Length: 181
Image (cartoon, rainbow, N blue to C red; front, side, top):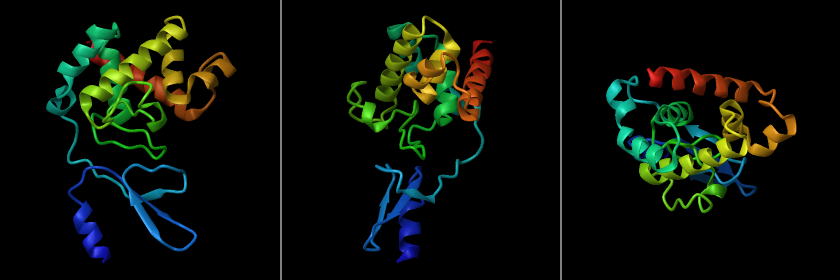
């Protein structure tokens, strides 16, 4: 049976999570709904990022940029760091798609299918725009809030002192600079 499971899911391009309940029943999903799920099969990207994969969503990013007044280069950098341009990406926390939207936020951002690149980019861009406005245009704080949540940034009144968030802001800003040039 294990061979069949591995064979059946190997062509899918998303991580698979497993949870064993109190009765010993295995539950598999590509969209974990709780922290009880643990990684079972990690997606292995096929090859390195080349220009065709980094440019694949440029038309959608351009549309979102124009529609919401958020820099194209910033959106592209955020997508690079969030999902590495993988529209089927799912984080260990359950965030979904190119801009890694949490399931609890899908309705708020008007996203019916988080794996649809257009919906995900539009919803994520709306959220990022709200954060930029909320933090008075202070981009590092808006990015920290995208990663750690706005309440956490407000609590610290700066980029929270978490290595993950500090690295996240640094990496997004690095790619923002790269994509601007």
